[in-house]
Image (cartoon, rainbow, N blue to C red; front, side, top):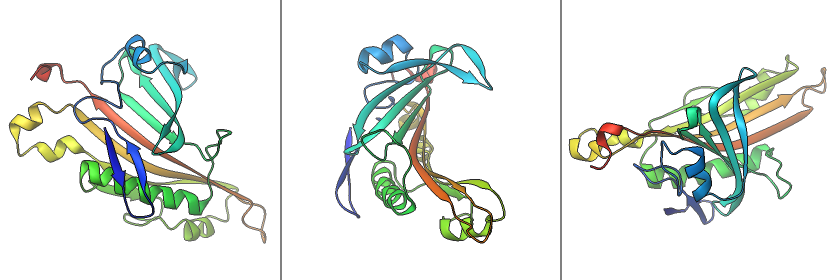
Length: 216
């Protein structure tokens, strides 16, 4: 399913279908089923705290998303699809790092498209304060540390919007969407406080099949 992004230029964004999964996949699919619908890519064990989880995998493919190069990662704990990360690459070589301006522009475009698809965001969080993401002030305020990390996130919960309609909610598999600009800033000893700053823009989709509602 595709939606058109407006605002800062025209961009098309491929979004997971509500009540199904991301793209051609469905929540709860096995690794074998996901790979049948998304050929190519690579499979890795899903590790947590450097320990491999049993029958848990991360399947990664490179695709064009929103007319931009991206890496899509399908997370399958215990061989059941429950999360999808879309990480936007900054260039053809596959580097995820962006500068502050390009990350902010991409965040605005993606938020416009996601809002058109899922409605107004449920809430926002950021390193600075609830409704803003001022990287400049944040970087300056943390200049006494060698390396600092932060994030600016926007959340949607599409199924929650359907609670007033029991019939519609019964057909809706739970889905959360999270848009994030995460940043890492490395400082030199003063007075040259800024050494390097990098940003990564991602969309996270979360879903969980509700067996009691399958087939409705």
